[in-house]
Image (cartoon, rainbow, N blue to C red; front, side):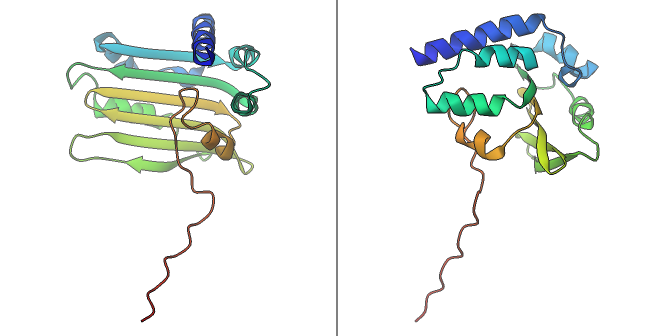
Length: 189
């Protein structure tokens, strides 16, 4: 029942959010907009601050997971997701992805994870925007020949709270090292 309610809230929020003005950070470069028409499957999510607050009203204040979600969402100004799946490769170029990455080249943005495969597998960039010692934005760009996904979260993000929500509400489980692991003990013989 809880999952059904959350799905209904997400669909309602997405439907209402689709009519909202698209944030500038959600705008895909022209080459990728053309790729949307070629995609076999398209996920398109635009949630502005008003929609996020509206959806938060439906969270159960008695459920600790949903209370954590509410805390995390309280500092978010916008969420943008674009995910394109293709039946065949070659529907977008590396230059198109570079133009997308270039939106996040400024002194406040840092690429904290970069995975570049030379074997045609997935290339991933995870970028954080830091201002005054706090995380104020997150962007993920994941590209492989048959899929391109772009996620942009604008607003204050507490990595510890985000990590606790992993595996819930459709958020992937991400292991963030909170404490350094102790070094293995050497054998003394």
